[in-house]
Length: 425
Image (cartoon, rainbow, N blue to C red; front, side, top):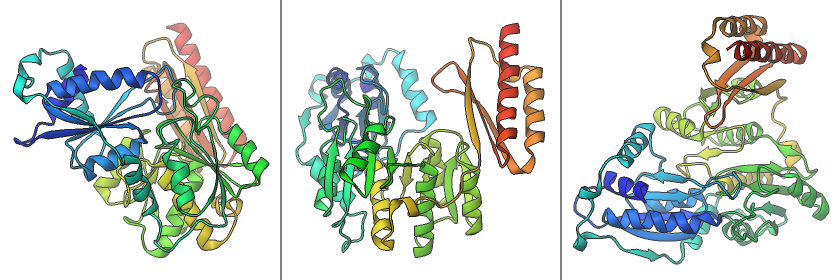
């Protein structure tokens, strides 16, 4: 409730009736958090448009479409049902900057009651009809008007999440034969052994019905995993490579490159380099990818995990829209996914996590020395990325290079030194 109050007060602009669009995924706790958020937002004088279960990118789109002052998505994305969270979007449809989020967080501990609306200035809340249709039409318009998906058999796994209605409907309206799985949410089964984090069921179904492609979304549908006609998973880096190449050939690719994170494979960087395109790397997190895209005028970006951002269409990752771009490539080139999605040979890459119980082992002299030695051994033909997890007490150690044995040795040596430092502490 206090988040609603603080966010509402932060986005008061002028003397018009302020409005908020508020969506959620299918978690049971969404009902509770939705009501609390509505109370806080109305107390701050904001009118709230309740969207019900709907994908995160739909909230980002509707903020702009409905000229709202804030967008709110209640979701914990690909996490289990017992987790939940709040995503905030500004009036431009973009996620808030760290600075604005910190300002809102700072207000939570302050006495903000005196700044709330008077009795005659309280906001109202109402359910909004037709929002699913708006999003479906938006998604369909990202394809060329004359393009049809007829002749394609598609399995779509909606993770019992926010896209369980809109994704199958959009694909069917575009002409595809659609086999929809995990479209019966009950509050507890979101992401449960399904969706983008558990694609085994999708792979099996693609085999079973002899589909041309499988599409797995996560709980709030801002992320996608593609499965080819043989049931093999297509890496997010390969999806970015496919879309970037297609857009580059048609003259649509902006900024002379693609934005991804430090985790993307060196093979993607080399593939783009062969087309005289640059791979811009950011720290992990789709927000940082989007910020870099906006700052440097690029329109394709994303993460290896399947958050693909196509800023010609959306201000955030959109699993359905990204999948539609892959489907457009299939229709244009009349080739199977297995052929289209092998744009480059991935460089051997290894990621391992080491648990820490406290302290800052990355600042210890032995660890610094081991990292420097590893960089020297990998040379210019490899990369090393070491970072603390943002959500767990872990340090993630990733190395890649042309020599698989060297990559494994480098990662294991660093983890051993971190573990010894931790034990000594």
